Length: 402
Ligand SMILES: Cc1ncc(COP(=O)(O)O)c(C=O)c1O
Image (tube, rainbow, N blue to C red; front, side, top):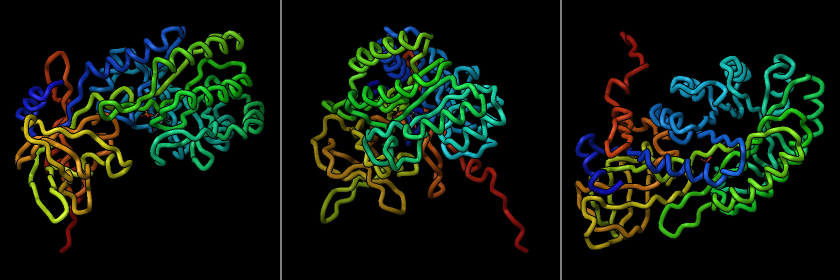
């Protein structure tokens, strides 16, 4: 998408605004399917949590993806978007047992990551096929909050618990049809994937009726020119070869699954916000935008560095700015960032705003959530209206204090 198209959308829908480029999403999906073209059965299950707008889910359905979900509500959204239950995997962590049962009733693939839950589920529902989430204890991932494979992690069944796991399966007679891992996000080194995959193969060999092996996700995407990213093409070559070898030895057709979020939608997203104030202080020049961590929390939560461009003044002289929001706490999007001269009223564009941006937004400070637009075939389609005061009041109950 180009700056003129983005500015036109702001004119039409106002700011702050999220815009997603359908072509980029489709391009990333194709990159991944091309990289693994040598695998007979490939399942790409889009991680709904990254960006859960129903129109985005519809787009994924159209291009052939399945869904990776972590809550009953994400399952319901997927079904609402038209996915059949067999195309949805549900990977909860720490949810109530009733929620897992409800998901099973909806017919989606259950993925369990806790031995006591597995035992309980197996005793009550031995005929429901279950996938198990293994924690291979491989330290991977960028920020601490998104590294989930290490020894202190709450995720997955430890690989060291295999004997107990096998005993539960035998005792309950349950049917394990898949094996899964997800070691974290922002994995740079494909050797980490390959190493963890070996651990998963070893575990997989102990089950006789698997239909799929799910390698989770964690692909790192670039945030600016020259950034390192996961080399999915190289991973595709190496992992496909090893997977096909394993499948042959296993003696039964297996699907290879992934569940990427960031890789598919991060770079497709643009967050557009208007500059309210430019404020010179003793140490910096602040550009204060008409937004805050209520709309985009990743810089504060993960320290993510979203590239920021001044769409309204692209040829201006470059200066250094600290870009902040309007929240009543420190909400710094970027410090000492070189941006073309910013004037009040200018529109700034934050890149990589597709994944974990709108989906993590809130109504903090009683602000409205922004509108969302999908850019497809040269046209902007409104896929979520900006909230209104009625939305803020919805579900709140005024009381009679007489
Ligand atoms: C179980 C699971 N699968 C997939 C993902 C998606 O990861 P990413 O957005 O890095 O592709 C996550 C992210 O938190 C996850 O927890």
